[in-house]
Image (cartoon, rainbow, N blue to C red; front, side):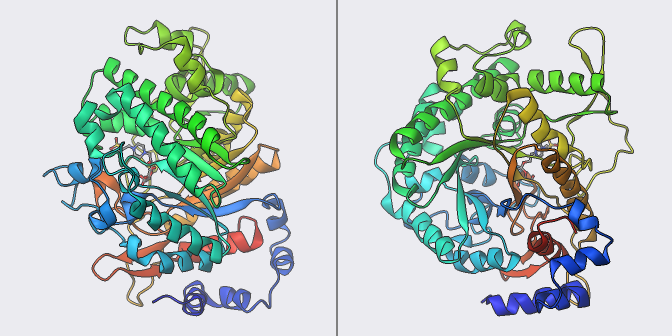
Amino acid sequence: MWSNQFSRRHFGRIAGSAALALSTGSVKPADAQSSLGGQNSRAAFPADFRWGTATSSYQIEGAVDEDGRGPSIWDRFAHTPGKIADHSTGDVADDHFHRYKDDVQLMKALGTKTYRFSIAWPRVFPEGSGPPNPKGLDFYNRLLDELAANDIEPFATLYHWDLPQALQDRFGGWMSRDTAKAFADYSGYVAERLSDRVKHIFTINECSRLVHLGHGLGLDAPGLQLSQAGQNQVRHHVALGHGLAVQAIRAHARPGTKIGLAENMVNCIPAIETPANIRAAEIAVRELNAGYLTAILEGKFTENYLAQADAPKYTAEDLRIISSPIDFVGLNVYTPDHYVIAADNAPGYTLAPFPASFPHMDAPWLRVGPEALYWAPRHAAKIWGVKSIYITENGTSSTDQVAADGQIYDVDRVMYLRNYLLQLQRATSEGVPVAGYFLWSLIDNFEWMDGYQKRFGLYHVDFNTQRRTPKLSASFYREVIRQNAVV
Ligand code: GBH
């Protein structure tokens, strides 16, 4: 298995002589800076900035039948023929359920001091609600103890899309308010038992994707293709579930537990950074996130959102619950969603179409626009006055060929990360309150509808042997963390 020693040697080898010198401790960050003409001092992050990696339960755990776990909508979906590109499932995935100790060592080898993971609801409540399954929670107890022993702070997500299948069967999952209530009960239960060690909790990961791909396009579980009205109602129930969970966590967690969410906000970039375009981008962000982030952070829907024929059914009490105060906002940022140009006529902005030549990584949707990582947190801070922001996901897939010498020279991922991180540093240097960054992902994993064909990890995984191998990008990230600056 993976010892720390081994990984350090391995890092030295893959990153060449410069990293070898660094790993012996003979070159200090200051020396590195002076040799680069002081560039690094300009690209430094706040001293207490938190660096981490992110994963999610169904994508890495495997062990879907162990210790009383119930089935989730992703088990059902992945086992439905034709849904996953390579006909794979998350039945085994990275076998993290059994290899979590080794995986914690991978985090340690990077120098990360934080880790964002998700808890599988069907491990804790196999039927979604009703009697809990203490053995299911025990896995997370073991993981948390292992993280603590290695000085890595846990940030836990309560819902990364693996809804208990029983709730889908019983009342249509998120199509019903009952799922929002069950989510709150589960959240309070987990918070009570884990908040002695987990001080930061995210309620729901990416409402926008679970609505659009899960209930609109049918490409994610539960694979539904609802009308616009149906999708808006699902979004409303997810928002309500978030709000009820915030209240339940506050009621049951230890004092001082911080609560937020992790959202892939529809991110609008001023096409040219003029004051008019920046203002237009802010208007667009408010409107294009009206059903979720705007409602959560403002306590009301925008007039345009309500004016549409398909507006959700809601009560004033719902909005009060949805906008329960939160402590931080997590943003998943991969791409620029829209480039925006100011317009005189309503709604005050134009969304520029993307030219076919716009560059992307190893997926057509993964467009390369590093400034997305500057604008997302800046918008959240400016538009809603958010005081604490985490980048809860950022990263990229790459074709990741294993070279003849066994190494993975993912210089494209390094290029992507370097340019995005420079834009994040631009934000923190301007005082945008970003407290930390979680790179997606620690290890290659089950990439939803793409199966194992898309790789996002800093560590390459051979899914036949479960062998983990650090890619060049792992050395890059380790160096960024060591210097607390873009290198
Ligand atoms: C995140 O989603 C997830 O949180 C994470 O679990 C996942 O592994 C990671 O990113 C990488 O994908 O309509 O077919 O063009 C990222 C958000 C991904 C949103 C892809 C929209 C469009 C797919 N998005 N997506 S498609």
